[in-house]
Length: 137
Image (cartoon, rainbow, N blue to C red; front, side, top):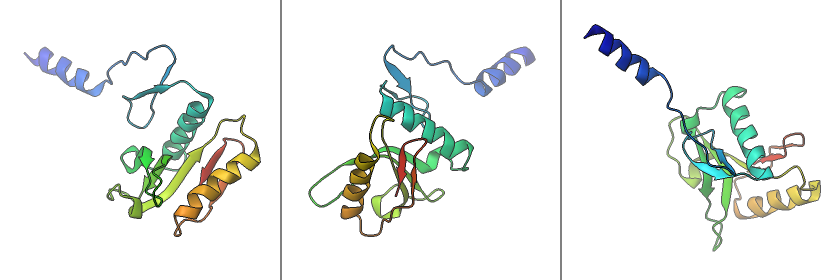
């Protein structure tokens, strides 16, 4: 009986194995969603890991593919970071992250920032990570 409880506790502590389909990448933030394997997706996953591991953001405070309301347009931001345990609503967004493939030239990244900034007057360009190819607004 004690051995069964010990096994149950160990099973609960170990993460489940996830089989990732060929041509897919497992989303680091939710650990469940399988996204298309693209150069941009690799950049997004690298940035997501950095936000959690290096900058200390909690996964629960990050939304992936968050739909923004910009006038009549509804673009999706690669990731949006909210204050700790805050509602995941556009007006509560702390940082918007847009990732681009390493193949995108710098002027293409600038257009992306301008498009997002144009529809969100409270946003300002905070940082362009040249090495990782991410724009933080």
